[in-house]
Image (cartoon, rainbow, N blue to C red; front, side, top):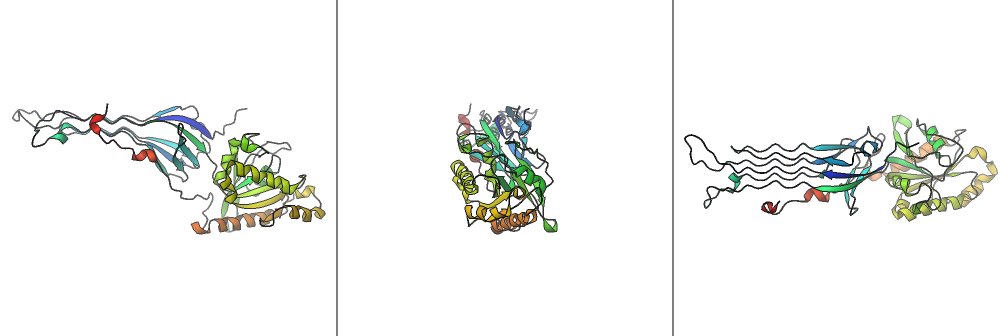
Length: 364
């Protein structure tokens, strides 16, 4: 069955062409030699991205390969300017990143509800002939053509925005834990790769506070090289504030499993290891108390370790407390954590927005 979770699309964007300036002269019954009065052309339509919390995937753009803004209208006599081309507003889910498909150059990133980012500016309208009147040229017949719009193929990638990312091998109990922590209802079964798309859940905390947890599909050894679900979902981990590593109590070697997980993240993006981490040993209902000390000894001493059972609810409240305090510590420089989801105001760079025409007369 085809999934409706689409997190990657390639689209051609074309901003509108500017309208041509008018070469017109004032001609009235009693003004036989009126001066130039050609109006300016209207600018072409811009293309914007707009963040929306009502969208969770890019599926609405999957079959829309070309998005084209309207051109501006030409100027008219009487110094009347042409109408501007209608702008295009592309609604995208939060966490969407746009890059140039050919150069891979970063263009924009949407992180907030209602955030509006200019992706492609429309072409400027040409100047009418009244702009070129001078003491030496009282009757200029020249008017500028409109500036061409931009035509660019872009790639849009969705990186799930969440405060906490659950990281672990397939069948580590991530989906079960998410269903216990939140009201999310992911598919749960006793076989690997039950989760084929990222799942989000809002965790209700004390005093009506909340935070967002994402269940990222299982990683396997070699995922950074494209094995298993591979690179398809590793990028979703990049936008999580903290990483919660899940290791099942029935693993053959808890410390080795943790090292493999961190190794795959490091190969994919070394910066991921700069995030705060929490280690959770899950499925403690399948273990015996005598093994707890051995589990702790095999895992790093400088990272918080919790032993839990999603089935019996053992350690669940302690886990919520640990995740919340870790989030507070992680974001202390950004002020108080917002109600879910947590969004940071990241700078947006759009190199195309500064592209301007130096010589209008050289246009086609």
